[in-house]
Image (cartoon, rainbow, N blue to C red; front, side, top):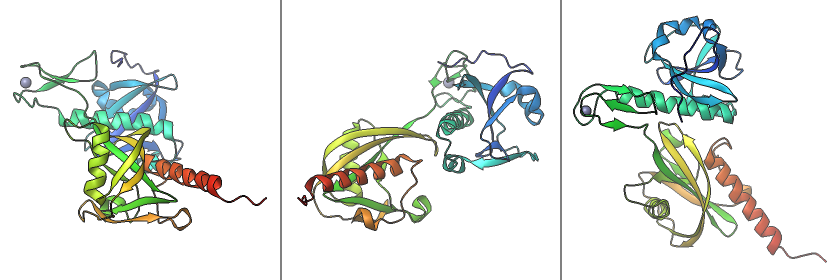
Length: 280
Ligand SMILES: [Zn+2]
């Protein structure tokens, strides 16, 4: 899966994913991620022995360099957050950048063995860190998280979480899958815990890697079954049934939450067309 043994020469043209702190370098003219030959990236040459191959994208090799907390000023480059990158609407680029960021974070946080405390080293046949003493091996952390859009006739349930997380936005419900739980159980548990209702007719929608910092969002559609909305007051502060023509501030379509909402509103519209009286 990972071809890490490719050697980087001065002429190697690649997609470079270079992180400083929690941000990624991008050309200031906003043309997207860096597609360059290694020789042109003189600002990164000191990190030559820390280049990590993380795969390919559009037939180009992709390399990760993590500068850690090193801060470099460069007139043609700017540092952008992963959220800002997502909002630039370059979905395919965001995918490879998300992968790079999750691997960078994994390597930062797995320098020492969790079992015996010795130094860990990256192995060269797959993306993993291994302890040189006890052979304990760790893989990049991925945290599965369900996200669900709930419909009740011609309305959609949208909830507002803690302000710092949701930025005054109403969105679908989401939560981490617990150990030993199926995705379906996680949906039913999270919905009941956060808003006190039961749902039915659960259907898989799609998924999205969500590198904040290492979630995999697994999206579902569901219908209201029973109960009255009663928010938990911790994860969720407010939740209501919204009609499509009276929507609050909702997430953008670059996120799976935005696409789940869009899909549910479309379902409501189609349902209305079916049930609307004909004027013949
Ligand atoms: Zn160990």
